[in-house]
Length: 611
Ligand SMILES: Nc1ncnc2c1ncn2[C@@H]1O[C@H](COP(=O)(O)OP(=O)(O)OP(=O)(O)O)[C@@H](O)[C@H]1O
Image (cartoon, rainbow, N blue to C red; front, side, top):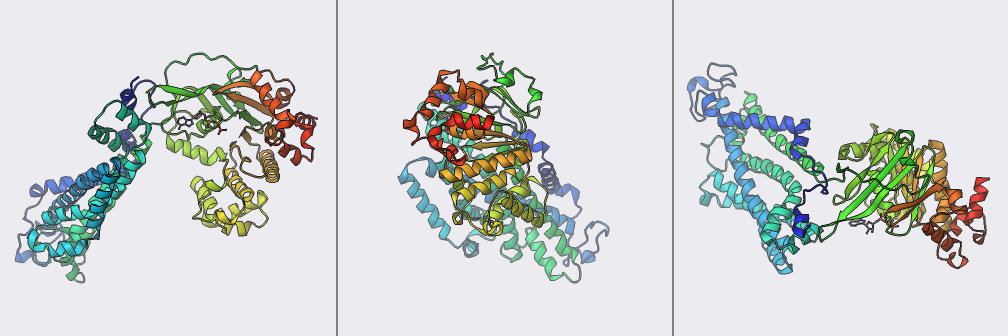
């Protein structure tokens, strides 16, 4: 496969794409707001056919006429003009204003943003300088000062507004482009000889389209509001029907005929809200439509079973809480080929059991864990296999379904507690946020629950920790906080990725104790990713040993420590039990935790546990 093929790959190995249009059509918010906008636009377009009076046609009989008067469905205004006719014609004015303002802003901002973000420092500095200059112009004042130039024509005014609002779009696009310009797929497109124009137009713009679309919706709303605002202030022609003009006139007459004010305000509000809500739905649909790691339907080649206990494959999948069968994960390389980083992993895990996944750095432990959590990076491709939790296939679930699962059934404890807490918010607010996202709960109930959880994970002064910012607590405390967050919804499966590596030795033992207690109490299955056999000896009932993306041996922890069958397992164990290595490898943490002399060795610890 060439580099260009990679950049445009849609072949069997490429991640599955979900149609954004189908997602959009399934989203009630998108359907409702889309229909509302469509109806409004159609009403505007068909206005000459739907009304019996021109928008400026005045009649003495119709002055302040009540709604329902003959020929005046919404009544007449104080000048005797048909409110319904003016309302429908105002739709056209608003839409034209919105389209002009938005398209001018988009054309300038997106083009300059792509160029400024993609090309070198000089181009970026020049474009930044120009747009910073434009941003210093006092927008509204300029629009008023330029009134003699525009002649009061709202279209010319919106053109200027488009120019003035383009720096916002420029900054958005420039930032997004800077973020993706060094991605592998852009490099691949470059290497394959595509022109910069094509790379920018086809690859870069495609990737960053989501935020631009939501910005477009906001821009439409602001353009329409600005035009209405200027008309309300009486800036511009008073012969062009517009919501702003109608609101201004209705305002004067508000005590006598309040509906003259309410109709245009309502219409303007509905249009603006519809644009913003539709933009949000579009963004969500495009986001969910991004390629996702998913089960590939190409026939799987049979994989050798690595050990008698690789279990999952042999047993009925429904028998286990978690069954991973023949899982393979690959990443595209710059040359366009897929490189497997996890190759046919099969594992099983039951409730109340702890499975240790051990192996050297880069052996695929974290990738396997991420696949279970459904958080593999978008460029990852699950080339074959299956992950079943409680009999439910996880591969191929939508982002929404996975999010729901992560909030309730599967939880995660990361390696670096500090970097997983947001420094800008208190510990309590972060835990409450997570809890309320997964469970319907009042703020008060969530607060009480979080305080109880902090107490449960052994935090001495829960209220103080609740009110603390992450930098005000220790690493061990932060890990307890994250564990509290992870077990908040009593998950069935807890995935802990090197949960003690970043902590000092005494705290490591406490955290492992805590995990063990919680596991017993909640009857959770725990998948403990580690490179440390000492941690395995302390906590795990079974072990899976990984090497270069494959599970080379699976079995009861005690069996593996006593009679390791695979040479790699033997090598790992001998390196731990070699006294020379004890200083660099922390199995002594385990011994310390159990009050043992480190040199007593891991097998002794295990044997004590087994007895
Ligand atoms: N986004 C990515 N793109 C390409 N390759 C990746 C990506 N993420 C991980 N890999 C590769 O996947 C392989 C397995 O990584 P993984 O993080 O699962 O290893 P690990 O066993 O957890 O190691 P460690 O103990 O160091 O965390 C590594 O070779 C890594 O380079």
